[in-house]
Length: 318
Image (cartoon, rainbow, N blue to C red; front, top):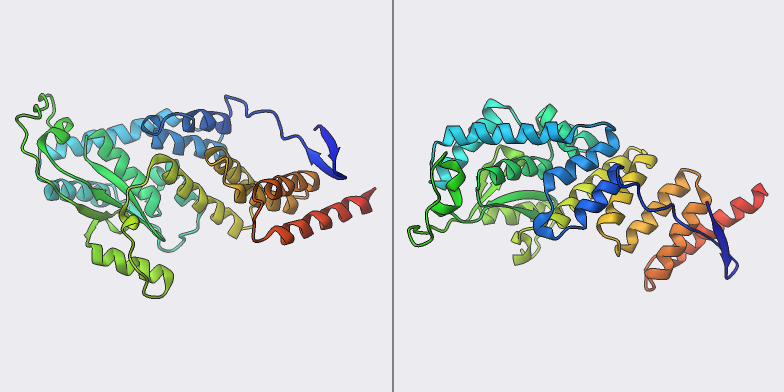
């Protein structure tokens, strides 16, 4: 570890860039791609590799491929979106027995894709991920919707050419031959893929806030891959923090910093984890970096107090 003194305060040079073969290094590479090239399943499995060293990402990607193949055979070229959803749900929640974890929602395993596939249990965002990844392999027009406190899916639109992968071995129709039929169907993967109305979404949001609130149109806006991964990692971070698993929370915050390098609050939170792990100099580094960047931070004085407390602790040790 190298250090220098600036303005009377200790500063710490962070470790060298992540090893390109580590989970964090590979995650850095994948999220550095353009949005349309970020593979959510691959990124989610790389995150899981931090918790499960040696995890075979290919094995779980193959599992998703096999599930998509099974659904495709069951659909047999079906084009009606409601029938597609019914068959999809029957396979995923009936045949395979996937379900939402209502008894231990904060279990970190609910947020790791490999665990969700093995245990067939998850939370809204990871069950949505399974649903979306199977749908993507079948050419279904699905997109994730991040409601406050709950994650759902929208079957965005439907036309014969978008379902070409379902017609095994058939050629896709030209645009000139297709007759688009627009559909806007909202699904709740946490509750068996049930079709829900916009009014039910409004009620969900009200339950989150505990009071009537305006339902903003942005609530139903689809989330991109970075937003999706941020939300998944934030859930995992909260799970570990609630269990006082500070080292694991620290690792998840590293992923969040890689994903959102200008979200300065993550620097503060990593400083807190380092402080709780007894890594005083590193905590000071993160706290100072947070104060330099979040110049109007509402908690600036609280963070300064933490720095002074850490410096006092270090002085007592010398």
